[in-house]
Length: 457
Image: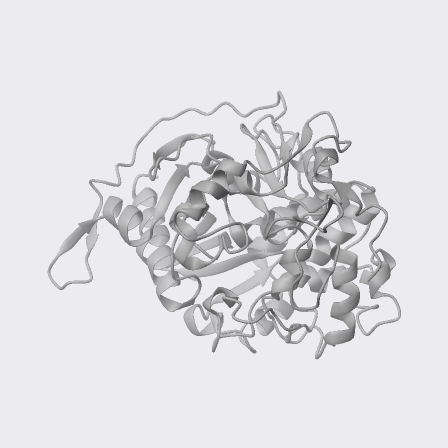
């Protein structure tokens, strides 16, 4: 397959790629992969569940990545305390036994750091385990999807596009395909009719989803955008590694393959958790703004939201990032993402970052997404009273309504509709997805903590 001219980037050229004043493009730190090799892993397999305890903290360091610096518009972080998870005792699995929330979070849930914040943005509790610290940029897996949705909402609110527009209006690869007239909103809600996926490479881990769904993405989509690193093509040029469809050098080449391999079905009728939906939101943003993903994120979200640390995104040689899962973010900033939601889309100064209408949709849903929730995915077997809207899940538990970002290894940034309290967890759970995952994080950690905080409201 012919390489694009843009793709001809050498290793030496990568660090000098043009960026905005607050965005840098960085090479991997070779020492990270050297250290990981001692544990039998590398950037090619960093995301497999068995490797989570080694790779989630500062995961960007063994990837080519965009590093986005915070602006001077930082939200002051005040630690007020008020919750001691070591003293919060809950029922253990063993009858007639109690266990501290501290032990549930650190040991059972494999949480590496967390921040609990109130609606004012004050920190009620936080801990940094596994040698992490407040500045550690933890990979958040699919929780990134919610941030991409927030970015798309901000860009749409600025007048660049409408969620009611057909996808082909902004994504040329979708033109003259069965996807052409599907609205951007269907992709935002994962009701675009995508169920099957292209084949993945042999022995791909598939996030442990076998028997539950067909998986959320194919291996080659991730590889094409730098998720598993870049390699020398033999001529000194950086390219993604070969994968299930041979050599695909960028997202466009992958997308052209996708539309020939997979056809939509019953658009709008069922919810199916597929990362291609989020990638379409990111693609729209990139195409309408004319900016790489990281630079658009900086302009519309990071520089305005009051975030306090750096954030990073894996990239390929064309500065493309996976919109569905390439983000690395500190625990406090992860919580600030939810802070924007509970404060009407405004930052700590009262300045608008995302539209109120977007937040209302996330919190209230609509009949279409509520009806679509239980048609195919296993999630409805766990949470019947729930829905997926604008890349957020909203559910009811113990009489409490909660909306949350979710990453497959325990990366939650959740907020309580009633109190505005926020819980952000940076997990490294080694059995991603499934019933035990939801039980541990949602029913054993998030809901009990929100209930405990509500007592002192």
